[in-house]
Length: 336
Image (cartoon, rainbow, N blue to C red; front, side, top):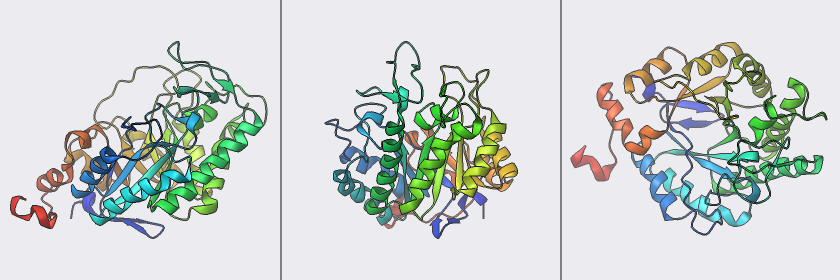
């Protein structure tokens, strides 16, 4: 059997294959309320019908002020749980697993009340944030903890903490964006403290698989590179994180020379050096490349983004190319 179609079990949750829908914002909440609507139900459930092993839903804000846009999904209120529960029930009905990415945009938010580790704006197109007080930090960590409780109530199988792409947690981790002189800045240990406390808070109520998405290379002089994240990955593993989802960039404006599999090197390095499972993401479109990555131990899961926007049934195409029998949904049997 191709390794791409082997199941993976983490903390008692079995993902039926190694194909993951990468979290991608849909900017589709109608009333700026963060509520699930018909679009989200159709969009995500169709990938479960298409036999994606794990559907990771978009960055979901833990506070109203932590939204990337006013149209983002939210989990800052108990009122969000019912809609999210309907979504998880629909995905589970089609044999898929579903995860939620808990997020706070920090200085890259475009809604009122922007806060960040330091009062540095991302670019001229963004507002200058307020530097977070210790009380702001405490409240934000609690917001992640409350979001984890709601994710459990809503029936998610996996939580991913968004620590990448220049959003709040990445801003704390990076020396480019964290100029604090208190216990949350000034050294690698202090910059890691915010993420460490978020992980601890989430783990109080969440016993299922926990992922963290990182930007393993910040592509700027003085920014974090892979060696820093190998160290952080070791720390995360000790705190009960199960998988590092290895992306890159986004903390400062930049251009990246992207090519198929350009970020796999980071997943491989962290998997080898930190001894933790990893996910590979970034222009992985061909089944042969996805299979090679998993088969050769370069990553444990393959996160697909744009390719699953183009084709919700990509797993079927991959199975055909890799000569793997893949049973169709019963309703599609005559056309499979």
